[in-house]
Picture 1 (tube, helix red, strand yellow):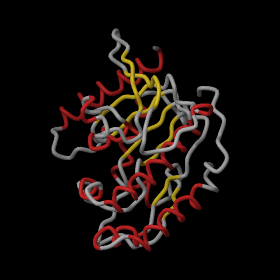
Picture 2 (tube, one colour):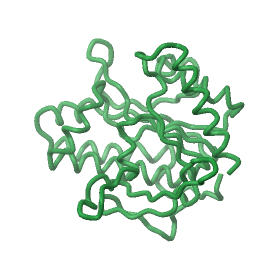
Picture 3 (cartoon, one colour):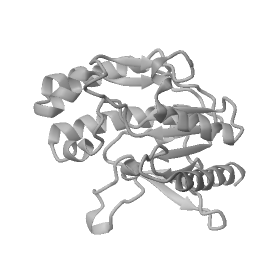
Picture 4 (cartoon, helix red, strand yellow):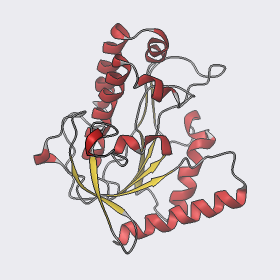
Length: 250
């Protein structure tokens, strides 16, 4: 942990009120499929603070034939919880075990709306209210991550690399893919990127309380890709494990 101080308003008891405010606002503004998604409610995993490793996913799923609408706070680390039996989460436990991380890790989704089809994010950001809905969640996620102040962040979905500011376009198109606006520096010997600073027009940042400078960020794809052969999955998991180990020692 990087000497982190948990910011007021961003602990497990208070975060749901932030989510309620976001979803209430957009239930009054949204239309069409965006409104349908908003009315399903949010899902949020109980966080473990003071942990050095943070896995970041994209958003909680919603299966029409199985899940019910409604807000869903859940504790990923209670084995009896039905949510934790989902195969998606087992990959994080397996990777953490392979790292001998014990309980020194936690999990957070970048977004909190419940939707199975992740490509919907691209359609949201083409619409003014959809884009604002996305940015409101990014603001909350940034504030939570800043409170967690992990030593290593593993971004576990290729669709959300852009939202970390990794693929900002050239100077003539500087507004594209800024989003949270992290700027990175790469360790040439390990290839691991670390957060150098942050600059964004999409979220508000108090630089005096910015706790993520120096945090290593590893950009990965989904840990649960079902179209890969077992050998490929094992090779990718081993590569990711080695990167995380390097990030902790650099």
